[in-house]
Length: 367
Image (cartoon, rainbow, N blue to C red; front, top):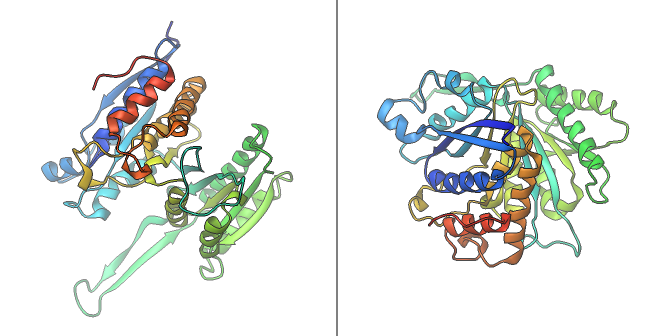
C-alpha cells in the first residue's frame, strides 16, 4: 500500500528537545498510519552534549550524512554550558550548507488560545514571515582587532547579494499569490517589505530596490513597506493587517519572536528552513528555545514541534497527512481541556501528544 516513503533525519538536540520531538514523531507516525505514506526516522545525538564530549556540535561529515535524507526534524539547540555563538553554529552550518535560504514562520492565532494583546472584535491573525536565511547579518564576516585590549575593535559585516535578496522576495510574492488562490479569508494578497534603509544605506537600499523590481511583476499583490521598528509597533497594534512579511535574516529573526508572543508563545510557534528546489533536505523545527530549566520535567508544550512536523509533511508532498495533524492540533486547542503551563493548564508534554493523536482518530500512545 505504501507508495511514498520518506527518510527523516531527527535531531532532538538540547534541553527539552528530546521531550517535544518524542511527541512530534509519535503524532506524525499516527498521521501516516493506514495511508500510502511511510516515515523512517533516524535519530542523531548531536548538540551540546556532543560538543562537550567531542569539541564540536556535530561530526565533521554531518552534512554528508544528512544529505541522504528527505528532511530534517529538529528539536532545540542551546545549553548554558556552551556559548550561544558556538551552539548556533550548528544550525547556521546546516542552513547554509543545504542552501535553506527561506526561513518560513507562520504566525496564526488559533482558536482556543488567547493573545496577550487586545484585539479588535472579529480580528483574525494569520500572517507569515518569509525570512532570508543564509546571508545578511548572519554571514559570519568580520573580525576582532587588538582583542582583549582597551583599543579592541570588532567588525561584523552583513552580506546582501542581489541573488540572495531577489530569491527570498520573489518567494514571498509567490507565497502571497498562493495564499490568495487558496482562499485566505477575505484578505487581499500583500507583501510587506520589512526594511531599515533610512539607516542601513547600502545593504537595505539594495534590498528595497530589489523589492520594487520584483513587486512590479506581481500586479495583483499589494505592496507595503515598513521600517523594522515601526513594523514591530504595528504588529502589536494591528496584527490582523498583515499577510506576508519579507525580512532580512536578523530582522526576520527578531520580528518572529514578537509574532510568537502575539500568537500565544514559543510553544505554538513553528518554522521551516526551506530549500525550495529540494536539491537538499529542508529542516523543520519549533522556533527558538531549548528551555533547559524544564529539561526532564515533561511540562513543555510540544505543539510547535508537532506543527513543524505538519509543515514538513506538507512540504514533502504528504498534504492530506499534514492537514490531519494541523486539524487535530486545532481541535485540541479549541477544546481547552489539555494544555501545558504556558497556555494556562497543567497538562504534561505527553498528555498533549496523546490528545492530539486521539484527535487524529486513532489509539492513544503508551505513557
